[in-house]
Image 1 (spheres, helix red, strand yellow):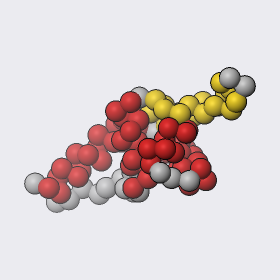
Image 2 (cartoon, one colour; image 1 turned 180 degrees about the horizontal axis):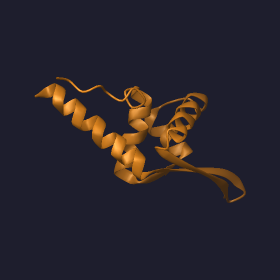
Image 3 (cartoon, one colour; image 1 turned 45 degrees about the horizontal axis):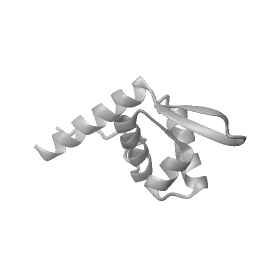
Image 4 (cartoon, helix red, strand yellow; image 1 turned 90 degrees about the horizontal axis):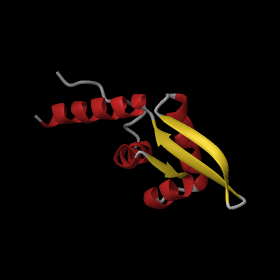
Amino acid sequence: MFKNLNPLLHSQLRLAIVSYLVSNGESDFNELKRITNATSGNISVQIKKLEAAGYLKVIKGYMNNYQHTSIKITDNGIDAFEQYVAAIKGYIK
């Protein structure tokens, strides 16, 4: 029987964000925006959804007198991603 896919990670943009962070551990807002080719508004909304689920930690601060937002993957985010990948592999078998 097929496992249900995590609807939060089944979105292309949210999956791209989490996938990138699983590989890199941390990124800043502008880097995620650049690699996903998403608009600031769209990526901001998706990051907030992932943060609310406990998959990401968002750290806001300043760098060189400019606002800087850093995003880190949490252990819960890594676990959710691994479960999602395992479920997808179940579809392939």
